[in-house]
Amino acid sequence: WPNDVLWGGRKLAGILIELQGDALGPTVAVIGIGINVRLSAADHGRIGQPATDLAAACGAVPDRNVALARLLTELHRTLDAFGENGFVPLRTEWQRRHAHQDRRVTLSLPGGVTASGYARGAGEDGSLLLETRAGIQRYHSGEISLRSASDGKSKAIQAADERR
Image (cartoon, rainbow, N blue to C red; front, side, top):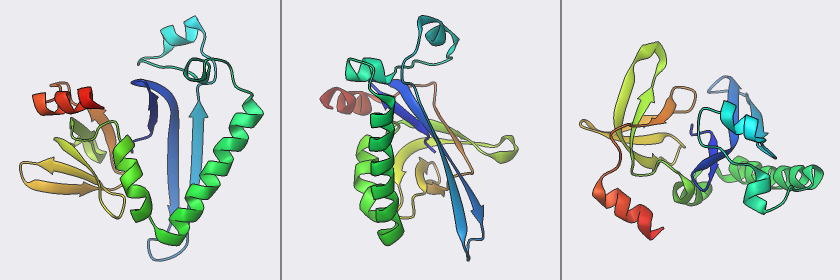
């Protein structure tokens, strides 16, 4: 969570990370990344949410090999930084880019349980910080599905969005 990469409020890519292993021992992460390179009009019609592609974001269809090489270089750099220092050095940038920051969200938890509140960013351990009536609650990846709440944003958040 969250696994959507947005460009102009539209989904450009999706990332899925699956973890296997022991919390006290070795852990393996499998990272899947899907990027919309060029969507046809029919593709847009089949997608159940606003979407965009690299062709629209870049103004032209990029060379897939060049785009993949750049993605892998950046992913390698980020994973090295995470391996050496954990999430803390990445946290500020993540919070700056987090599309749900300070918005009311509903989390879908295992067993059909939901939790609603305001997304307040990520903890130093990478957990989602959700402000509920009971205070700040922490949720870890693999436990939740993030969806924007239907009741919209507060006026303060709308004003903050307009300043961005």
